[in-house]
Length: 421
Image 1 (cartoon, rainbow, N blue to C red):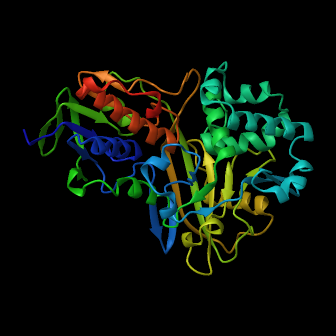
Image 2: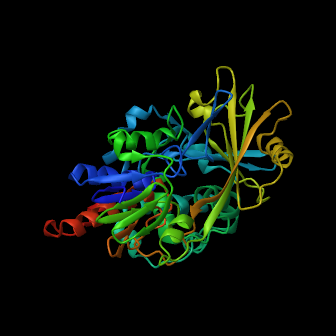
Image 3: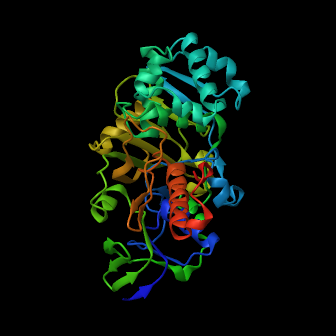
């Protein structure tokens, strides 16, 4: 055997790091193995010509419960987005905001053209219910798809197609809105209760902050795992003996290492990054396509929220498309001309980031959004495919899985509680 420890964590994404944090706090010996040359998994930031380009457009929601126990949000130096959206409909650009956070925009939201006033009142009632009702009650509601839940709330085809489908398709990476209504309820809850921001140094700062308290000598990068089995993890350098294994890699890789897992369907996502000398919008707000063209999910100027995303005097535009087919950049540029109502001929195309396995699909039934993490024989699995498909789901799953490991290794201390999410 190459080495020996109590717990081997396979994967250094958010779930694996959250599991390591809890095990380290409990004083359990552990070792984390990451196949890549960095931590973070699907949450990463690359620097291109002094621009910060996240691995696909991502944001941080301060309402995620697990964030507060794992890092100091203030240390990320977050830049904030407007709590609302712009909707392009023909020659009209409607601005709809959360009146609780943007009270000066309440009148404009009431008279906006996407859907009717009744639609907007019903949508507000749905969001308020998700924000204020206990989570247990939201997850006890009859489960259906997100689209069916929106229609059940009395929302018209107009507001669904012109506002909610384009907006939610970018959040859920699911244009068909087949995602569970229980996931939708948690999404609406987080948007109603939290603020949306970007770390000054990119989303890659999030996993670095989670990992910061961990001893560097217990994390091995560039260490692919070939096989896991009860009591053993096999790497190219040799075997590691252990009492428990936590597989915290992406869902396709997890199913390869743990054949007993049911394979999870993954959603695809592509983000086009452009540099502009002048910003096409004067505020940090998401722009969605209400013209029902179903090509661009959303476009935004990240540097309006976090100026560090672009060099001085320049701006960064991120445009996202849902689905496996990524249109050529000139096609997207023509769409941006229409959406922003101005020419983009002077913009520079920095790069296109395509992520074929961006987010696990979560169709009903999802139940209470907590799938089993203990597989028996000392094998455990963590990731957002075991909880909700989100940053919160990844962190909560890792924390919960570590709780299950502790319960198995220290049975006298009791089983994990409901607070473990």
